[in-house]
Structure formats: structure tokens, C-alpha cells
Length: 400
Ligand SMILES: Cc1cc2nc3c(=O)[nH]c(=O)nc-3n(C[C@H](O)[C@H](O)[C@H](O)COP(=O)(O)OP(=O)(O)OC[C@H]3O[C@@H](n4cnc5c(N)ncnc54)[C@H](O)[C@@H]3O)c2cc1C
Image 1 (tube, rainbow, N blue to C red):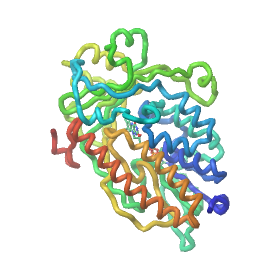
Image 2 (cartoon, rainbow, N blue to C red; image 1 turned 45 degrees about the vertical axis):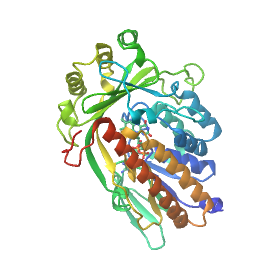
Image 3 (cartoon, rainbow, N blue to C red; image 1 turned 30 degrees about the vertical axis):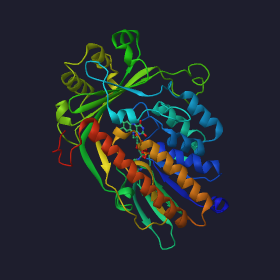
Image 4 (tube, rainbow, N blue to C red; image 1 turned 180 degrees about the vertical axis):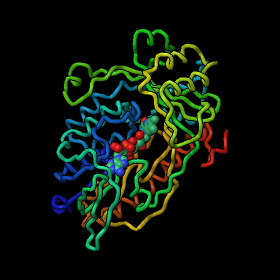
């Protein structure tokens, strides 16, 4: 058992995203402290999508890492869950799709959960405030022969750690250079946003969208819509660390940029008005009660992100540096398992760090297992995208 030994080690977690915070909670549960270095100035600096679908492995990993009170708070603050998903055409007729049906909840302890992303992050942050340094962007690292790692941040400061866990998302330098993670552009983009449940939106938006999850399969694109209705207005919302939240429709398109009349570039960030124009063009022949989703959309919430995916990978030389989440295995949101896999990583790494005899042994065992299941998750997500809207290669050539 290494818990006692680990308590004297300097553990650095790079990135206070979903995965990094989950790991820090897992360690804290065993009274192991870590230092978290986050490049953003605060937890809510950027918008990052509005709902996360948490599946059974993801929920179990959160249960393992969070203390009982925070795990309960997570459950109580999720939007209402419904079993299954409906597949609809762009004119709101019922349709069928084998893949989407396979996502249905089947025999599970409970249906997939739908937390508001910021709420989940605020919960994951609880009790870790003293461990986080905001405004710290990792720029470099250097390993010594004794196994110590010196980290350098963009403000020139340094920190020496016995274990470094890169949880710094899709652009992770450690993921790329140390873990040899190779990411490609799938050629697709996701456009997402939310529409608040105002009285006008409520009456204009089709009734069948007012419950659970709907998947619209269009011409070379797909659209997922989740109705997010919260019931934590009184007791839970009175907790001062949770930002208030109103009911909303979350929606996300996936398709090639050309389908939306957008240019294919990583560096092009259209304005909210441009995004809305593109959506209006692509949906102009859709059912008016479906288009109402965009008519009443919350403009500041609109975002476009290119979809990247890691290639399947083999092992690298493991040591006192490792990675979790998107840093080491980015996958298309078409599978809805990126964050769930990051939670699984966090729980597994915690388990090994408290049970193995040394950091390198724990890291090696974690990586062996993580590489296997994350390769599978990447493939499932890739296949999901292929079936829903057609994938392209890195040059964006292949269509449906
Ligand atoms: C539209 C959309 C919908 C999605 N829906 C789902 C879903 O329903 N279910 C699901 O499982 N997954 C979903 N995903 C995927 C999910 O969002 C990611 O897989 C997940 O956020 C990965 O968590 P992470 O902690 O690895 O990275 P992130 O959450 O990206 O966190 C990385 C953190 O590191 C910080 N950082 C970056 N660089 C540095 C640096 N150099 N130094 C210090 N800090 C740094 C960032 O600021 C950030 O806070 C979705 C993705 C998108 C785009």
C-alpha cells in the first residue's frame, strides 16, 4: 500500500478541467494532496459546451473519486433523465437509426445523467480551492535523473514535482511529445449552443423536443437536442458556490464545415451572428417548430469547434510523467464518451497510486489499461461519427 508514501510526494496536475479535477478529488479522498495548475484565470472564463452526458462508467468513476456529499450534490443537480432517445427527420417525423437506438439506456442501474457542465465543474472544484493556481500555463518540463520533473509556466515561474499528470486537454504538449499522442482533424466541426426555455421558446418549439434527447439526422449532418430541466431551484441552488441555472435546450450539430457554408480552418472563429446565419441557411427547409430552437437561441452561447481525434496508440516509455483525458486520447463528441473516459482515467490512476509500490509502477499499470480502453473509445466515437454524418480524412475529402 502506497497511500502513506504518496502523501509526502509532490504531485502536479496540469489543467483544472473535468478530468484533472476528478483526479484531484480522488487523491484528496485518500488524503493525498496535489497542486493543480490551470492556464485560465478562473473556472468560468470560457464557455465549454452546456451539458455533459455522463454514462454508467463515468458516474461510477465520479462516485469513486468524490466524497459522498459532493457525489450526492452531483446527482441532485443533474437535469431530469429520461430513458432512450428519439430519432427524428428534419421535418419532425419519427425515424430509425440502429446506432442511436444502441445508445438507449437498456438495463442500467440508472439512465445516463445530464449535468450542466459548469455546475459539474463547480462541484468538482469544491474543497480544492487551496490546491489550484489559476493563470498558470505550462510551457515546458525537464526530467532529472532522480525522477523529479521541473515544470515551467508562461509567467516564468517553476515547480518541481515527483509526479506530473497532464490533464490539459486537446492541445496538451505532454500528451503529444511525451505520450506520443497523434491527433488528426476529422474534417468535421461541431456547432453548439443553447436556447433558454422562455415562454416564447416554449410555445414555438415542437412539443416532442420538450422531453429527453432527440437526434435529427439531416443531409450530411446530425443534430442532438437535449432538454435540460432542473429541479434544484430551492435547496441546492442556495449553495453559494453553484452558479444559478435556468432550464434550456442544449443542441449540437456535427458535420463538415462546407455543409454549413463555413471555411475549413482551425483558426477561424466566426461571430455568433455568422454562426446563426450558417445555421439558418442549412436549416431553411426544416420544420418551423424545429427551426424555432435557433430563432430563440442564446447568442453568447454559440460556438464552433473543429473535431479532432487521436489515432490508436501503443505504449510509450512510462515514468514520472503521465496524462489523462483529452490530453492523451481525444475523441469525436459523436460518441459522447470523452469526459466519461477522462473520469475513468482519474479513478483508475487514483486506484493504482494508492495500491502500487512506486509511482513508476502505478503509472505503468495505469497506462497499460488506459491505452486499451481509450483506443476502443476512440474507435467507437469514430464509428459513431461515420454512421451519423459521414467522416472525412485529415484533408476533408471523404463524404457520405
Ligand atoms: C460540444 C461537445 C460536447 C461534448 N459532450 C460530451 C458528453 O456529453 N459526454 C462526454 O463524455 N464527453 C463530451 N464531450 C467531450 C468532453 O468535453 C471532453 O472529453 C472532456 O472535457 C475532456 O476533459 P479533460 O479534463 O481531459 O479536458 P478539458 O475539459 O478540456 O480540460 C483541460 C483543462 O486544461 C487547461 N489547460 C489547457 N492547456 C493548459 C496548459 N498548457 N497549462 C495549464 N492548463 C491548461 C484548460 O484551460 C482546461 O481547463 C463533448 C465535447 C464537445 C466539444
